[in-house]
Image 1 (cartoon, rainbow, N blue to C red):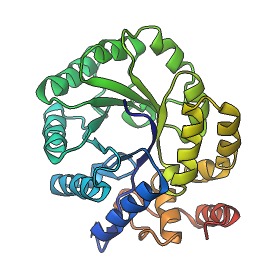
Image 2: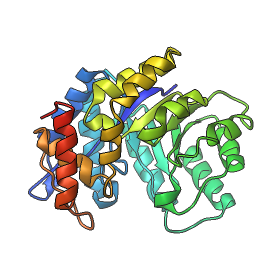
Image 3: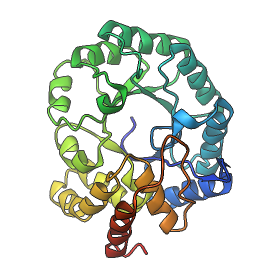
Image 4: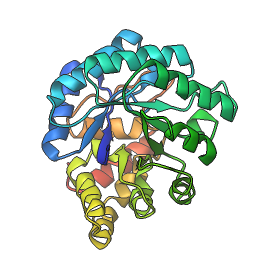
Length: 290
C-alpha cells in the first residue's frame, strides 16, 4: 500500500526546456532525505504545460534517479480519457509502481461520467491507480458513493484527497469493502487527515523539507500523534507561504533560493510577486534553510 510522504515533485526548467540534471538531482536528494515515494508530472510538476514527450521523459528520469529505492507514482491524469490511458500505459511500461489520476477537469462530467472515465482507464491498463480528488482545480467533486464504486475495482487502490474536508476520510471509510490508501493532498491538514484514517500525504512542502515531512508521517504511522503534531507545528509557516500564490510558483521560487533549480515557470503561470517572494525568503531564513 502507498503510505507515508510522497513528494509531488516540481519540474525544473532551464532555457524553456526541462532541466534534466536539476530534476534528477532533486530526486536523488529526496530519496536521501527519506521520503517514502515520489510523484512526477502532477499539478506541482506543471503537467498541463508538458508536451507528451516531456511528460514521458520526466517519468523516465524520475524512475531512473530513484533507482528502485522508493516507489514512483506517476501523474497520468487528463480530461481526455483516451489521453489518460496513453499516459498510464507509458507509466506502466516505464516501470512506475502506480499512477495518480486527477478527476477530469473542465469537461464537468456527471458522477456516472467520472466513474466511466476511471473504469475505462482501469480496464485498459493493469497498474495500481490512485484517484486524485481536487475540486478547486477540476471543478468537480467526486462523491463518496462514486469513490466507493471505483475503489471496489481491483486495481484502484487509493485516493488523494485535496478537499481539506476532514469529514471525508470518515464518510468514505464507512462505504468501503477493502482497505485502501487514503492520502492527503493538503499539507496543512495532513496530520488531522491521518488521525481520521489516512495513511499518508502527497506533499508540496516536502520539495523543500523532505526529511521533516517524512518524520511527521512516520510519527503518524507509528501512532505517536503528539510527536507528529510537534513536528508538524514547525512546518506551519512553510505550509502556508508555499500557497501564498498559485502553486507551484512559491515552491519553485523557494527551491531556487536553496539552489535546487531555477524559478522558471511556464505560462500561464508567472513568478510570485515581490511581497510573496519576501515572505517565502523570510520563512526559509527562519527555518535556517538559507
